[in-house]
Length: 223
Length: 222
Image (cartoon, rainbow over all chains, first blue to last red; front, side, top):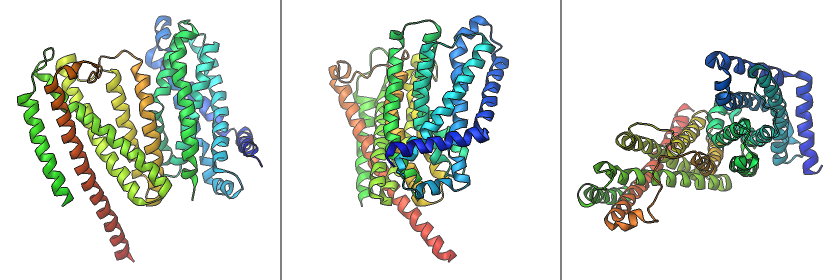
């Protein structure tokens, strides 16, 4: 099997098993809606305030549900010793990383699409703009690039899912900053040119951490 | 022996640096006496970054060579780095209070120092949650590498927001116009760097002793 068919096989396996069990998606969607509802109670925002805090609420919902989704990425692999099985297969370690990352990317984009719809409905902010979708896409790649590595790491520690947010959140601060700033500019109706510096940071982060995680990942899952 | 020599050198350098900071160097015009904390704040920051750089290099070397000595070096250096990052935050706050009127401000460089601090706190949390030595070393190396690569991106992202912090103007005018200030800063940096080396040597020895103690405990159990 070539490298990419290995990757596709792993991603396909993840998507199929998730579509059959619907374990992750359902609970994360409920969780994300709860985050939005809690924000409504804590801020009780009017329309003017909403314009200011909308990007923040959106990204807190994305980040928290992202942590939840990434945490689940390696738990099924661990529970039935699937990862050991996968590593016994003639599959490159890097293919496991890319395959798992693409699977997580798919789920997170799906969840984010739903969050955006619910957000637009509940808070009456028009978030379905090409700018916001672009920013969300690139930010999610960054989340997944780092998150897949740390998820594999966290699952093999004693504290398991406690470790992921503690590691993941400080590392992705540049993504959060850039995504929130760019979304705010998009909601204000600013042009692409104003958003360029933030998009550059997002894309640079994506490229750097995809490469670094790709190189480091094989050392995490060996044994 | 190595420790004693390093201790002696750093003690002498610190005495000289203290003398320069409190007696020799002229008081800065705008900020007055308060500005003298600069000669501690900047060297402390330098040591913190240097320590994390050593952790980064030692982490890569561990993954390549698989010798536990590199993990011990990475961990010892990260301990010093975390201590000095804490000192950056403390000396920064002490300096900010009289100048900006607040202990803390979400200014660019303060914010990135705080994120840096959080990244290396996470490094030690990961270490604490893994019992096996070999796995701990591997995982810690991954965090040591990813964490360090993140530092410039964090700095860049926060820098885009408006900043209160004085730009580092050591090389473009500023300090170089005042040789006594530059000399004091450089001596202070030298003193703190020797202190780092001393801590590193002692830290490595503690790590070796810890390992020996663990293996002795295992032997007693059997």
